[in-house]
Length: 234
Image 1 (cartoon, rainbow, N blue to C red):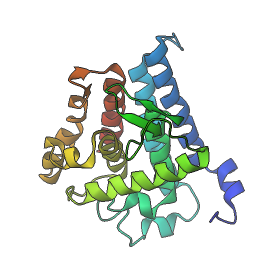
Image 2: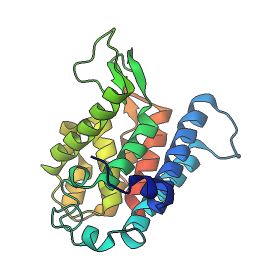
Image 3: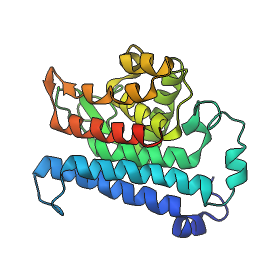
Image 4: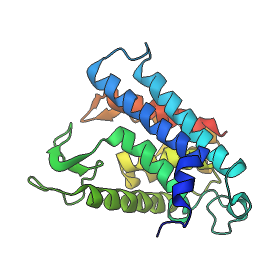
C-alpha cells in the first residue's frame, strides 16, 4: 500500500534522490567492469565506492532531514536500536536502498540463463528452483527480489547477533544474498562481528571474490563496494 503523499516523497525527499543516484553509479560500475569503457576516467571500484557512500548518505538524509524522523528513531521494531534485526521487513526505505544496491550488482534477466559457474539464474540473481526456459515478468521479479532479500536477512539474523549500523547490515545482506546464508553464517566475517570487531568483519568481504575456484573481476568490484558501505558508518 502506497503512502498518501508518495508522489511528494518521490519528488522531494533527498533520501530517494540519493538512492536513485547510487543506483546510477552502481550501474556504471557494472557497465565499466564489463565493457572497459572510459567513463569520466573512473574505475569500476571508484564508481562502486561512490555508490556505497551515496547509499550511506541516503540513510543520514532519511534519519536527520526527512519527514517522520521522530517515529523512525523511536521505532521499537528493532530495525535501528537492536542491531538492525529485521531491518528490511520493517523499513520500506531500508528495503528500497538494499534493492537499489544489490540490484545494481546482480543485474536483471526476465529469461533464465546460466551464470559464470553454470547455475540457472533469473531475475536479480535468483537461482532457487530455476530451470532452462523459465520466464518472469518485471513485476514478478520485483516481488521475488524483495521477498528473497528479506528472507536472506532473516537467515543472517539467526547467526549475526552483534549490534551493527544500518549500512553495514545492508552490505552484509548483499553479500549473504550472493554467497548464500549458510556460507555466510559459517564465515570468519560473522564470527568477528559477533566478537565486536566490526571493522575486521568488513575487511573480510574482499576475500569472497571467487566463483568456480577463480577470481571474478565483477565479484571483486562488488566486494569492494560492500566493504566501503560496511565501513562507512563505523
